[in-house]
Length: 354
Image (cartoon, rainbow, N blue to C red; front, side, top):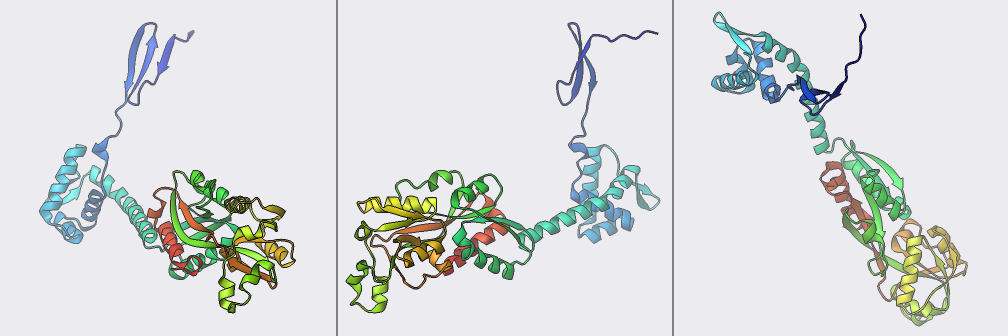
C-alpha cells in the first residue's frame, strides 16, 4: 500500500475546537469540552465528603463539622446536581460513598492538608511570623537607619527575613521599580530647582520619614566663626552660617546628588562655588575640612554615622537647608504585612525621631 499526504491544513482556531481545511472546505474534526465549573469542588464539599467517609453517616459528619444534618444533605444535593453524579447512596439503614464519592474522599485529605498549610502560611505572613523584605538604602543610612530597623524587626518579628542592597537613590529607586527590592530608603532636596527625585519616583509610592538638616562644615578658627565667638558655647555652636559668607572659599563636594545640591544652594546665594575636591566618602570630606583644604555641606545623617572630627565646626545654614529622607515602594506594597511593618518602624525609628 502506498500512502500519500492529503492536502489538509490543520488549525486550532479556538480553545474548544480543532478544524482542518481541505481546499475550500472546512471540517470540524473535534470539539473539545473542557472541564468546566461543574467539576470545581469547593473546600466545603471536600470537608463534608471526607467527614462522611470517616464517620459513615451524614448526621455524625454534620455534628463534627458543626453543621445541621439538613444543611449537609442540601449541600450534597446541590453538588450532585452540578456534577451529574451521586456522591452517596443508601446502604441498608445507613449510607455509603459511591464511586464518585470515593474519588472525592480519596483526594480530599491531600487537598485539605494543602489548604490548611496554605492558610497557616498566610496566617504567618499576616501575623509577621514569616515574610521577606528586600531593602535598599544609600550608604550613610547603612550605618544609621538600617541597623535600627533590622534590630527593631528582629526584636518584634524574628520570623521576617531581610536582604539588603546598598545603593544611592537613583539605583535604589530603580531596584524598586524593577521588582528587585521591595523598599528603598532614599533622599531628596525639595528646595533644589532641578531635583530629579520626582521624575525617578514617578508612579511609585513615596513615604516621608524625617527631615535631615544640611550643615556647613568649616575648620575651627575660620573667620566666619568670629562673629559668634563672644556668645555662650552652646549658642555659638548653633549659630547659622550664610553660604554667601563662604563665596571665596574652596569647596569639597560629595556624591553626584550632593554636588548638585551644593551648586544649587550656592547659586541661590548668588555665587558659583569653587570646587577643589570631590568624594562621596563623608569621612574623607570631614578630614579634608579638618586639614584646612576647604569647606563643605554635609547632611546631619552623615555626621550621625561618622562624628565630626577634631578641628571641624558644624553649623546649620542661614537658609535652613535640609533634605527629606523617604521610603519608596511599588504601589500597594505597603499592604504586604512585612513591608508595611517595616515602613511603620522606619517612621518610628528613623534617625531616633518618633
